[in-house]
Length: 147
Image 1 (cartoon, one colour):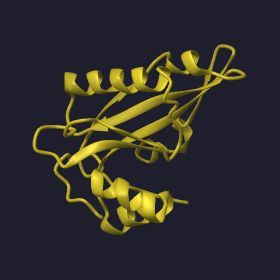
Image 2 (cartoon, one colour):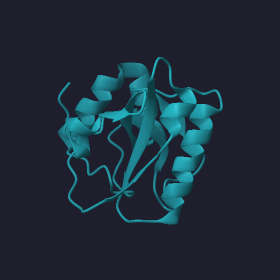
Image 3 (cartoon, rainbow, N blue to C red):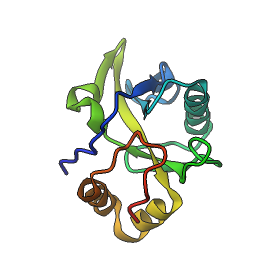
Image 4 (cartoon, rainbow, N blue to C red):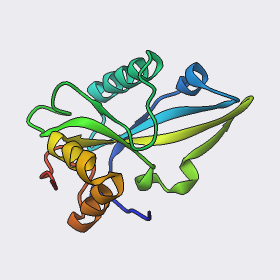
C-alpha cells in the first residue's frame, strides 16, 4: 500500500540505536523511529520503553501496536503506538546496513484507542486508508481520531 500520512510541521525525530542487535535473527533486527512535533526528553523516554517492551519478550513488528499507558503528550487522545513503515522519511530509511547484517527501521505512529479498535475490526490497511483520506498530520499530538 502506498501511504503518505502528510505532515505540516518540521518535526523532531528520535530513533533507537542498537535495538536490532538485542533481537536479531540471522543478522536482521529492528530499530524504531518516533517523529514528534517538538524535541522533548519525554520522547526519548518513550523510545526507551519501546525497546524495553520489544526486547523484554513482546516482540514488535510491522503492523503491531503498543499501549503507551498514558497520553502521548498531556491532553492528547493518542495513547498507543502503531508500528508502520517510515512514510514521513521515505522508503530509503527502512533498511539500514549494520555490521554483520541489517536493521529494518520502523515508524512508531501515535494513535488513539479508537483507531486501534478500528484496526482490529477492519485491518491495518483500512486504518491507513482512513489516515490518508483524513490527511492526518502524524506529528500533531492533538489531531482528531479518524475512527
